[in-house]
Image (cartoon, rainbow, N blue to C red; front, side, top):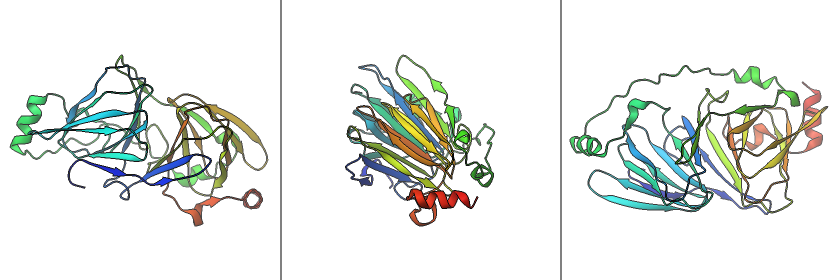
Amino acid sequence: MTGPTIFDLPKVNDKRGNLSFIENRKEIPFDIARTYWIYDVPGGQRRGSHAFKTQKEVIVALSGSFDVVLHDGKKQKTYHLNRSYKALYVPEMTWRVLDNFSTNSICMVLSSGSYQETEYIRNFKEFKRLRNLNQAFHPEPPSFVRHVADKKELGLQSSVFDCSLIEFPVIKNRAGSITSITNSVEVPFDIPRVFYVYDIPYGEVRGVHSHKKCHQILIAASGSFDVELDDGTKRRIITLNRPTYGLHIPPGIWATQRNYSSGTICLVLTSDVYDEQQDYIREYSAFKKYKEKE
């Protein structure tokens, strides 16, 4: 991808609810460094109105719809997003505005860089000047301190009481709230894969498996659902009903999601790409044997 492009995301059709996913360097042409979502946007409100010097983005309408108005310094084009299996790629040095949010819209953005104020161009006249100059940018390195978790050590945690709720930061604004997650800062791992489950019929059950190596953060981006946790000995139920909280589930936990409310979107951030053969345990009897070996 070189210019702005709307493209199809994988869509796994399932009677229990559809699933779409995005992995580094597969569905998108960069590694995810930051994931954030915008919600509770009042009617008639615009968001964005800036450009990035070097960062690339992918924008998805997890629910509802909105327009993304892009300008390359010479001409403007509007892209309408209204399906969770469609995404818009926005290259660096592109002025973008989010507009015409429908009721209960959720805008998810995947970015190639962490938050750095020096990356932003917030004045349109300055953007046009720099764009016309075709100036090369060399942004400052990230200012935050990375606390990279040892995934091997985390993998030894296999009790239901090692599954913990994480309260994410929220930027509250009359124009709508933003929750932003940077790799290995708000969550204890880098995020090479994001997926989300939507269109979930009443009474359906999802999950019902365990992982050998993959960590997950489950988030109710909208609606609510229960997560039943089982470590082979003890059980625990946690309800997710806010887009500002995530449930960290380490490997070695049998997890089941049920009691989805209407319009629920379950957003999942993972520490590894999809690996059916080496990572998943889908039979409970096999899970019990696996736990007995620990």
